[in-house]
Image: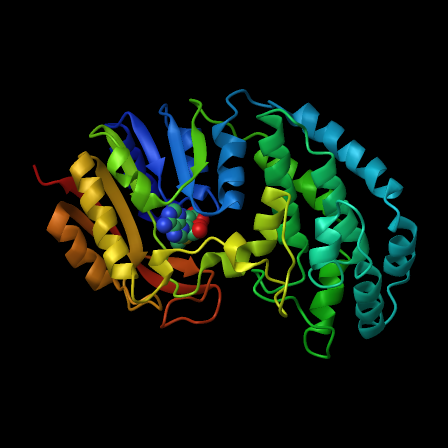
Length: 369
Ligand SMILES: C[S@@+](CC[C@H](N)C(=O)[O-])C[C@H]1O[C@@H](n2cnc3c(N)ncnc32)[C@H](O)[C@@H]1O
């Protein structure tokens, strides 16, 4: 959508604002775009730590090439540390042999069931989302993480991006691929991916991206912070449309971002529920109230808002029509555009498959008084 009207609107409105706020920053694409293109500080918020790590990796760096050397040193340490982890030899023998997928998966699960001190990726996801050597590589990435910012944030973001490319699951991490006839080939292909290579690729892509003006990113509930903005702020609002909490789809990335994880359970290997961020926007019975409180608080702070939402009925009980009518209560709707974008979560009722085109409202809202 940034190429499809949203980018132009953001540019136009940001020119009149002192800061740009990305209130539900998700994968941080809007935060990155704003930070790279506008001479304004960008502040990003989300309930999920992985989103904040991705946003911070760009918002917190202002010099081209900043921290790239630190990432290279980090990756060199990762290669050394993983070889020193006790199960590395056995894990490499198994992954190099890569027997038929069912045996590989069975053997991988059984060696990863033996806990290794301070290796949470190994015990939470090894033999499921990751092969044994992949899991140890991500654990080595966490162990070798630099202590100082902004290098730590850049390394964390690179580990998250590499994990999202390597995870043996269909685009998100609600469930890993099973080693059966239909999903087995995908499991095999994912387990053969080299996390270090994907980390190097991520460095090439994210390393050159820096903010024109330093900004920041914070884990927070959008409704809690919505009353704290200024009339000179431009606030971008892209709230959830799915009736399933995002943490169900992104817990693997969240574990990599936090570096910790409690005892996982279920076929999805979910962390305990108190470690999974939950949102009122993803509860059918609460989403309307959450939206109303959000918009009221934003209008009270006097900021300008750009809001995007699917035009049709969504699984969290909201729809483009409902969002538009709520927006009209608190704001002057000065521009309403309908565009298309890919839905990646399948959370909207009309398009349950991932990567479908959906019609999307783009609203420009100004305070009434
Ligand atoms: C539609 S996605 C945003 C996508 C984002 N614009 C992007 O480019 O990736 C919604 C995001 O809202 C976050 N979220 C859900 N409820 C929230 C809340 N109450 N406060 C802050 N973030 C929330 C989710 O974690 C998710 O990342």
